[in-house]
Amino acid sequence: MKRLVVVSNRVADLSKAQAGGLAVGLADSLSQRGGVWMGWDGQTLKSVDQTEPTIRKFGDVTRVTIPLTQDDYDNFYLGFSNSVLWPLFHYRLDLVEHQSAFLEGYRRVNAKFATALLTVLKPDDLIWIHDYHLIPLAAELRQRGCKQRIGFFLHIPFPPPEVLAAVPRHRWLVESLLEYDVIGFQTHTDLGNLAHYVEEQLGLTMGEEGRIAINGRAVTAGCFPIGIDVDAFAEMASHSNQEVDIETARRKVLERSQIIGVDRLDYSKGLPERLSGFARLLELYPQMRKSVDLMQIATPTREEVDAYVEIRKDLEALSGAINGRFADFNWTPVRYIHGTVPREALAALFRAAQVGMVTPLRDGMNLVAKEYIAAQSMDDPGVLVLSKFAGAAEDLHEALIVNPYDTDDVARNLCRALTMPLEERQERQEALLVRIRKHDAAHWLKSFLAVLEDQGLLPPNDARSTDPAKSSRR
Ligand code: ADQ
Image (cartoon, rainbow, N blue to C red):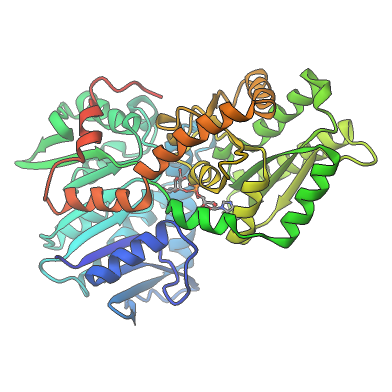
């Protein structure tokens, strides 16, 4: 088995036990095969451009990290990655803020990653690069003579050509992407968008099973929906949590239901629209007043980017306005928590909530949707209300699928979720569990690595449903 080398912008702290999810899956895979995980160490140096990586061993896994300079951080991280690619790939052209220094920084840091990675690479390593920060890394590695197979997984959506065309140097970006041997997307929509781009802009075709022939090489693009460790999350949710239990008992006495939302505080997650949808529920269905509340937990993120400052202000104002309008001396409709909750408490909160509200305006997949399902008890499961614009909606058909921009639609479906009979909730929950088990974290890893190792084509079920040419645009 080949050694696996994973590269991502940030590296999980391998000295600490991770609570489920992607980091655990990748760390397990790395320790089974022996491997390397490389990324930015999270430090910014004032001026010195230190390229020497820091190397630490954790059993059979080597952690390789490099610092960024303040300039790299501003232009590569905050700039091109999070003020150009992130908004644009989430179809938010209105939030793109480009400066020429951003693109230079993006190229420079990708070159820096390549130089550092070369110092630890072995000839038959298998390289797996993650996410939008590092799209040109394969090209940088190839320029330095790297011959190993290199795969790439995009965790966020891949937009249609007419949106992608707004990226400065978009053709260069896609040509860089095509330097990989395998390109993985979350959904068939994303895969279809690449097929449209290569056809319209590069005059190439994506053939059977996602093959693109370019410069005498074959690139394979496929759909590998990411998942969670279902059993680990369900186990965590089944443990009693004293604080959550007390709160649940109180709500039971008051016959009050709970809707929960948990997100990074990001404009792609549709948080103001979510609060408006909840307010519309209280307007359209006055009987719901005092019988339901919304707990929204939002972790601060990228607070140095202006758009994130704005979204925080909007959300605080909106939750205040809804509470001002509807609250009673013994009922506060919106509980807005600006912070991170430990995963154990999060799992218990998901289990105790009658509705999981996952309504991003655009999302690569959205793991919260899958965590909410995993956390439910079959005796009395809650209902997932899911945006049609989350990658997860491509598979999770038994959720109540909503248009997050349409507050009436959201309100109607919230009401339906809150009044759904037990039998229907159980049927939906059963079907959704089968789906998240089929596409869990282990399946994602195994299926991507099988294609990267060239030991098979796309996983049979996915390959059959992959028809990029016919894939509809989301
Ligand atoms: P994210 O945009 O970060 O990931 P998501 O998939 O929802 O989105 O994952 C977030 C994770 O952080 C979940 O495990 C969630 O439980 C946790 N989390 C979020 N808010 C939290 C809070 N307030 N407190 C504690 N934990 C919190 C990107 C893409 C997604 C894609 C993932 C994985 O944007 O579309 O699903 O990568 O590929």
